[in-house]
Length: 403
Image (cartoon, rainbow, N blue to C red; front, side):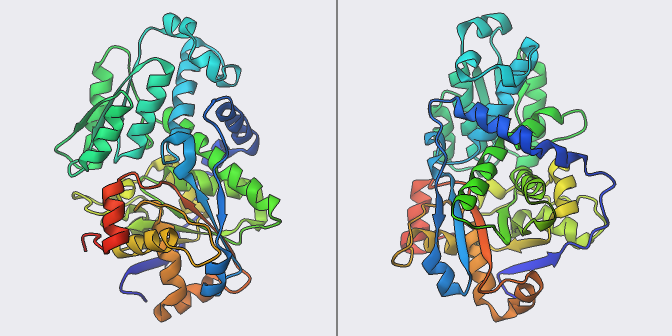
């Protein structure tokens, strides 16, 4: 074992239904990517090949999808928010979202027809900023709440995109409930949240489909290099992006799908604890979820993405903050010959896990079980850049991650 992480192999009983996998149908994801391509800000984010690091760790290849370049927002979340909000507007107009590209969605005619909407969201930072950015470009209002303990710089980033932004007195999951209640009481209010609950499944499903653009790009970029991943590491907060990645790669690679590791912060490891319980039911984690991995500080798994993860993911990991800090430094100060990746605390979680996996003698059993060796080709997603530049410098320059 490692004193910095715990792991469990997925031995949960099969899911009663795999219907959530259809959300990430390949034809649907290609249409979603076509929608994103209609944005003037669109360009595929880079896939960094860290071949020198791979050799150093005894791995065949390491590839990092760098989302710090996404739409100028330093994180991937805008993919889900923009597609979900456009889908809501298309539905209100009575037509499929595929009939409305970006120029059509932002047209004054559509706003006049629908009236002014107010999009509400709860966020640890990136999702709320994405909702604010998309709302401003679609010509509507946004109101964003952050959980207790959120950093002021993340709130200011959200406000700069045009949203009304506030930090609540509650943890993430309770703030979600209160924000949803406010949206329900507001004329023209729409909650845009990347987790689901009974009666609220459509918008979270659209958000997951929006994330499919990122995974499709990565799969195509790997194909362009003549590579196929043998393992994928993806971090989980509520689990929406992890479910989107798992769903897409299951559909894309079929029986040859790579093994997957779902990585979480120990302070909010609801997926790990659910897998550890082994029943297939979700286990929640209460408290304030104090972790530097702010984007992963969620104690209740999205039931839609959980259906995919419990059925198809291979390993669940709970890891300490020190490993995320290490991941930031490894990516930010690469070995000579490798490209540099600026990755925030949540974005670097996968790399932190990988370096511990390959260097800790106590994790030999996991390496053997997962069949990681000199032939392995490992894909990671750096889901954010330095969204908090001051904290990024504290971690990378001074090793100050609060531990």
